Image (spheres, rainbow, N blue to C red):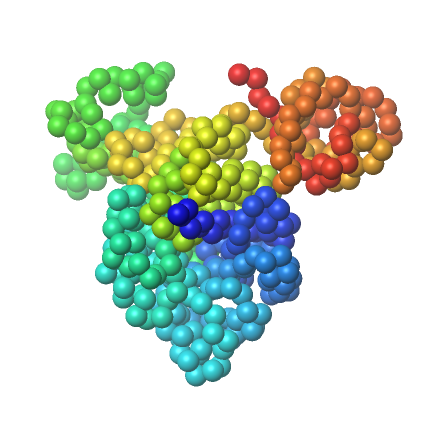
Length: 461
């Protein structure tokens, strides 16, 4: 008997991204409620767009979840029921919520008949890490638990065994937060923008430098010591790895017990003390989660939904992750072995290095990206969107530079195809050799069946 196919759940920051998610294999999407989700910025879903999204999703036999998962202060509690009522009236397939008080208020409204009875999914922000907590939320009337990212595969399996009749959802791809399930204070500290109110500025991704420090014997506060010129991170890393392990039984390097000061590039002179313990330094720039190689195990465990993070990511990111994880799920359900090519395809997405996070227990440095704060591009690079195809020529909206002679991967719901770009024209019909980047439209030879495709330049090895 084949295992049940889990739902593939994709993020949508706009209607176009929602459509791309469905085109490339998603079963459901989630979009943020204005003012009450943790993606208040870069969110195109107002009430009108939510209505259009729900109607389109249901017409395609898909699901539309509304994320309403902030941890509100009193002022937003006061206005919450007023603002959620018209959303519930549109009958989304679920509300994704985190705050116990808001959940109580919505459930009471449903029980009294004031609202339609819409399922509530418990957000990852609620930090559910054990089966007892799952059973508690089940008694409260929650229909699905989005488990904390800090769980291992074995812990997820134990929760499934103890709670066989509760829907479970697990994140399998996307950005990881440096704080426990997103409960970070950096953005609020630097910019007075509270991450738990939906206005995170991603301060953990900024470019920081560490500085040595001494301790003031009178106050105990850290005092900056100017670092030597020519500090080389890679050399220091190699020396450190030879001296002590990130975790385990070897001797601890004495420098690991020192206090250090952190300086962000945009705030010179503003020095912040930082300490490291025997497990590493759990701050700043985490790697991105990639668990495509663990989809088979999650399917066998019986997880109901596999979730991808990224409501502020690009249309290309949505399409590529939907297509790749769709194939991984279908392979796992059919009993086919894992295809390593799926990892290569995901390498084409901008990323900060990949990790399987806590699904597998690894040394502490596996979770952190110490070397680069920016996103790297590996196997391929997103370069354009096909708008129309006529008479064998596709009009392409250019996103990044590509040239005649490049290998171009045509990414389409019907299947991908790699071609060598032999010709290119501008909109006036003149031959050109370079599409330098956005904003620009060019024409390239392409079959009509690839209308709406995305284009990626295959990077030379």
